[in-house]
Image (cartoon, rainbow, N blue to C red; front, side, top):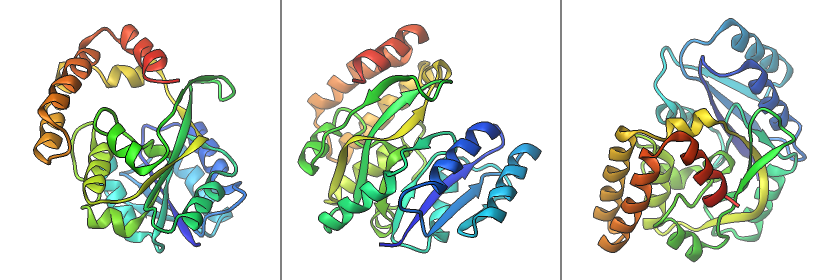
Length: 270
């Protein structure tokens, strides 16, 4: 089954992390048929040099350069236009895929032809790639995923492989602060799409205290309320679920970052 890998890169990302991420993509037991890398605006000299190096080394790497920074959602939508195959694997430019990630996900699509979205658990690390801080586990089967999604995001976006036509039919990545991928999964679930989560970690996800800090603040708490209201209007959640979500998630957004980091790593992870 041929497939594309879709990545997005912008100027503030780390050259070292980019190299580690690309190495993990090109050392897979099942190599991608093409890798679409969207340059979301002009890059630094260091990043640009690495992109050119890998472009020369791997002919399957195709670079799409945008004239200015548009944000992840718009960059991914543009990248999807250039993906030649219906199966598309997402990959962030600072994460590290396990060497058999793509092979394992393709096996699921072969075993369950009706499945449209396949993700997995992920392992979170900070500066040391060998020290795992936490693991984000998710339910396996469609019904479990549908119910879990009413409380929390049911898919690990950095590790997802999906059918492009299903994502485009749902409208692709629609701007919604903090929730572009979660909003996409909700729309796909409401469309009746079949999901599956591999019950092991296929990707190491780079995290930091700054990441949890970016998820906090009163503005993001208000974004949380808007998002919960929206999926309630879509009919995905009930009023009871709406108030339960807000009572927990609003508090997590506004508490001090040190406490929020502890909550994510010890209560929301395994």
